[in-house]
Amino acid sequence: MILTNAITRMALALGLTALIDVAQAGTLRCGSQLISEGDRMFEVQQKCGQPVSQDIIGYKETVNDYRQVDQVQVQEWVYGPSNGMYQFLRFEGGRLVRIDSKRGN
Image 1 (cartoon, one colour):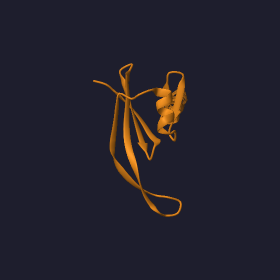
Image 2 (cartoon, helix red, strand yellow):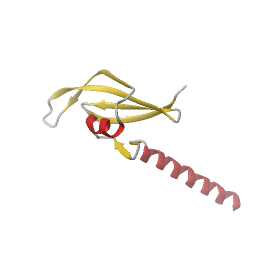
Image 3 (cartoon, helix red, strand yellow):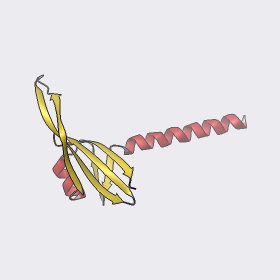
């Protein structure tokens, strides 16, 4: 009985931790401001300042609402290090689509 309760509590704690990690994956704090996936490039730059690196990765083909093929530019911006972490922001067509964090060496 005690073992079952401990396992249940551990599973619940791990589930909540995973849920929190998923919720935080699409946002980043820049000072007192938050940026989120879907934000425009100029909004990110206003809130976070100039990135330490800004590269054009290439182009991606997308299909719009009218089933027309468009090409959008893909960029990667890097911020940091902040507390030993670098933030990698990926933009497609001027919109933030992914935020990754990696510890610097």
